[in-house]
Every structure is written in structure tokens, then in C-alpha cells.
Length: 312
Length: 237
Image 1 (cartoon, rainbow over the protein chains, first blue to last red):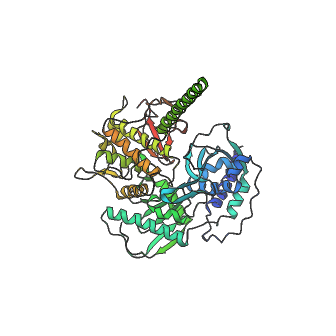
Image 2: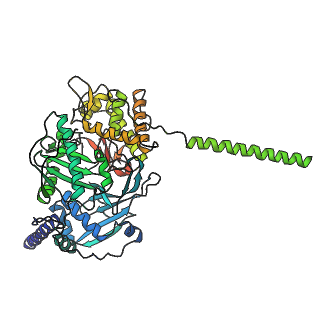
Image 3: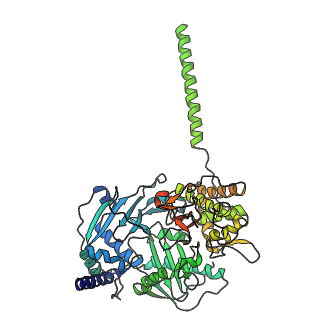
């Protein structure tokens, strides 16, 4: 029994490692998005019309969601139960909200009962006259991820989508290099917004902006979240860009003050939030480490010459 | 004559009825379309009401921002945050001290906001060495941008939300919170006895938890609003 248990455990760990490597894209230092072979469409499973139309049960979307969760929220040990089960179970449902007139956004949840993770998602569809901005997403985007105690049985209102673990693992491994990074005008928007926020922070502390070549690491853009992360190496600062709108939409960058948040790691990281009880000005070392892994290991390194000074 | 008179009376009744209906409709419409306050500028942030409003706006999502749901959701967020400030100031539960909940002794609402300094209880809100209550530039930059947007064209959601925040803050300074504390009657969370009322809020991400005796108010108790998660306290400290 012990031997079998050990073998089973070893196999499981091997599978977990394979899964981890597949999803993380580790081993692939080639980061251009066109390095991976073209991905054939994944055949959709029959689904309830309402949920399928909304995209919550779309297999490609669930695969992309799984990759995002692995990179940003779960660890190898969380996968253990999935490896043992041989399936990845998703409970999905729409969660209608009371919205403003003219807002056609849709909200939903994806619960992964095996690992107790609840993902809240939104497919935005509204306009903001004050910003002259249309906020519209073509897919559901993650708005929140929470650890929950999943009920033993699927509650009413959810639909279960069961995916084969090995197939998911293989697909994610095959497409492991398919990382998209901002470029062109999009990259310039990120750069300008980050620079403005950083200049403001330095001015507030009465410190001069660093000069010379600046190194920035961009994390891969998650296709299921309207957020982007970058690590500014010279300033030891994590930069988060987030919005309800698609970040690739150039119109959102006219309002960049609503998009950027900076985390100076040498000042704003603690081991435990108990050190700063009640304050959310800090991130934990674990969270910072995960962000750094995405930016530096999985990301794209850029060498940037400073632009002329920006008045904060 | 009779007929004419009858018709006249019918017309008269009809006319009266129409007038009543019209008046009723007008009153109803007046009630529905009562002008919603709008502003495109908060009170100066060196006033208590202006400082509170600055915090309420800073902590709540506006259209286009991540976590935006609706105008009502953002208003509920502002109201819940104001209640947290008030509860930390006035509603300390038995067995707790204010310093345990608010991180220090706070004689007034500004002290509650600035407790712990720039990276304290309300990120970016602090007092300087001379005692002035201030906020970091990014707070002012965002709010200034929202004010600028609120001033464009016909007053819309931005202007109404700014007015709501300022209205809450003004009313608080002049007497108290206008609006119910949605968590006041909460007595149990997942079997854990709690004090009721919210005493903390944080960005609603898994990594954020105030720790200690704070208890996360779950979704089914409307504990998440405006991208924030609200926390109550264990009944037993």
C-alpha cells in the first residue's frame, strides 16, 4: 500500500510539474507571440444556450482563464486534487446586476470547486459620455478572484463544465509560448502613463527621477483580464494598469489617471499584512514575488531611453 | 338646456378629472424628476467635509474604472465607507478599544482617516508635521480628473456621484450619516458571532485581509461593493 501510494504520489507530482510548466510557459525563453504554432480551434462541447452565448462555457475561454489563474492565483499544490481527479471542473453562472440605464454589461461567476476558487467576471457594454468612451469587451474579463469554501454539491443556477485534465494540460503546453505583449502605440501609452505616475511619486518625495537607460519588464497580457503589469527595474517598482475597458482601446489612455497604480517594492511590501493591519497600501512578499515572476521570467525585457521630463 | 347643462357638467367633470390627472401626473413627475444634485467640484480638501468627500470619491469606482458596476453601487460604497469611519469613531463594540480597531486613539473623524499616516488605515491620507490633513498627489490627480469630466456637457453620473459624496460629507459634519448602515444588524457570519456594523474595508482581492478579529462580510450579505470588501468584528474579542 505504501509503495503504491508513493508511486501514485510521484506520478501525481510529475503530472503537477508538467501542468505547472505547461501553464507557466516555463522553459520557453522565446517570448514573441508568433513563436507558437497556430492553434486549431478547440471544439466546443454542447452547452446550455444562455451560458454558451455569454461565453462562460466556452472552452477556449476557460483554458485562457485557467492559464491566468495559474500564473496569478494558484500554485502547484492546488493542482493536486485536479491531477487526481483527472478532470477540471468549472461551475459557471451568470449573475445579473441592477445596472444603469443603457448599460448592457453582463456579469458572471466561475467557481472551481476542486480548489475553492471563485472568479467574478464581467463583459462590459456601456458608454461613458463624460469620457467620450465606449466600454465594450468581446469576452468576459476577470474582475475578482477569491478563495472560498466550495459547497459539496453544485448550487442551483450553476452549470457544470467538465474538462479533461490531460487535454487541458497538453493544450496549454502546446501553446505555452503564445504570450501577447503590448507594442506600438499601446506600449507608448503604457510608458507615458507609467512615467507620469512615477514622476508624480518622485516629486511628492522630493527626489529626482533616475536618469540613463531604464529597464522595464512587461508581463504577458492576460486575455481574460483588463490589466497589465510591468516591473521597472531601476526604480524597483511594480506598475499595474487596469480598467473596465480594453487596455488596447486607445481611447482609454486619454484618461490615464484612472488606469495606473504603482507599488514601490522597497517601501510597500510586507511579509504579512498583519504588520500593517487595516491598510491596503501594501502587498505581500508572496504577491510581489508572483508579479515579479510574471514580469521578469515570463515577460519581455525592454530597454528604454528616458523621454524628456514630464511635469507631474 | 338639461342636455347642454349635462354636457357642460360632464365636460366640467371631465375637465376637472383631466385637471386632477394632470396635476397628479405633474406631481408624480415632479417627484420622479426632482433635480438630482450635481457638482463638478468637491469642497476644499482642507475643510473636514471636503476631506471626507475626497476620501469617499477616492475609494469608489467611477464609470470606466475597474470594479464599476452602477451609480447605485458606487453610492452604496461611499455610504458604507462613511459608516466605517463613524463606527470607528462612535460605535466601538464592548470588549474592544478604539485603538484596536482604528490603530490609534481618534478624537474626531479626520483622525480616523489619517490614523497610521500616509501608508496607514486610509492609503494616501495623512497629517503632516504641522498637523494639516493632506492626501498624496495621486489622490488629488484622480479626483481633479473626475471633476474635470463632471464639468463636461450636461451633468451626468460623474457630477451626481461627486454631489452625493459631498452631500454625505456635509451632512455628516452637520449632524450624522444620512442613510442606513446596511451591516448594522449583522449578528453572525458563517456561524461566527459578530458585532454587527462594518469596521474596515479593503480592496476586494484575496490577498487583502485586515487580519485580527476582523470578519469578512460575505457576498450574500452584500459585503462586496464598489470593488471593496467590508469587514465586521468577532463578537468575542
